[in-house]
Image (cartoon, rainbow over all chains, first blue to last red; front, top):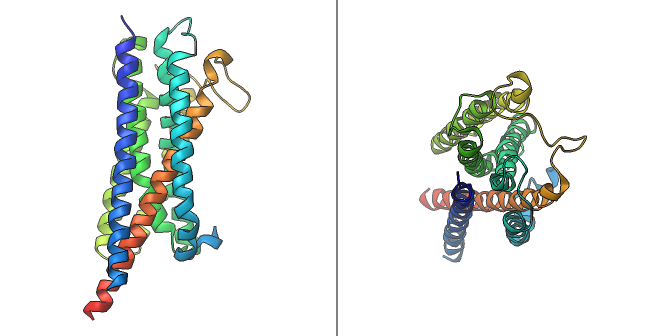
Length: 42
Length: 237
């Protein structure tokens, strides 16, 4: 059994899920902090 | 811990810490992944499949450490009424759930060529799956409690009760000797050869920094949302 497809799939899943987590956390932080700043300026 | 109880003081620490954790985490995780895929030799028994170790072990550690963080935040909230404890618990949960899911998926992918099966109701695998479902329950409970204006005490109690699963995961390979191998890395040392082991600390520290960055970003988002909600309430009244 060729092991490389399994290794690539495992790394692909790990990297993709980590990036999704970081991008979601970053986007939600930017959105919330922008809303708080906009309200402060009003 | 109590020095950061003030949200303004916490934000002064969290803003630079988020960027540093992201940068260091990405650099170390990429270096560890690169080294693990190209520089280490294949294992004499498992062959190239052993390379899954460099992502599976950090995700297992972070899946468990995340719940340890939730338990610590729960104690901090219930005993000392730390104002940021509930925020911290809610922020840790999505990152912990993500790494628990990565651990389960990469373990399953590792299991197919090594054990000949994607899944087995083995003690370690099952208790890790329970941890993943505990995370989903915590996320649902904490957000429902927050929507109803609660202080998060029910979620904190749930977080403490759920911590019972952590020693079960840890000792499962000793209590039920089924498919998952026993502990290969302990305080006393490691049964893995150093020529294979050396990139592991890079991915361990790297992914831990990324976990920390995601948690801080979620905490900052929740504090900003709370500020907006408070302001809207004041404007409405």
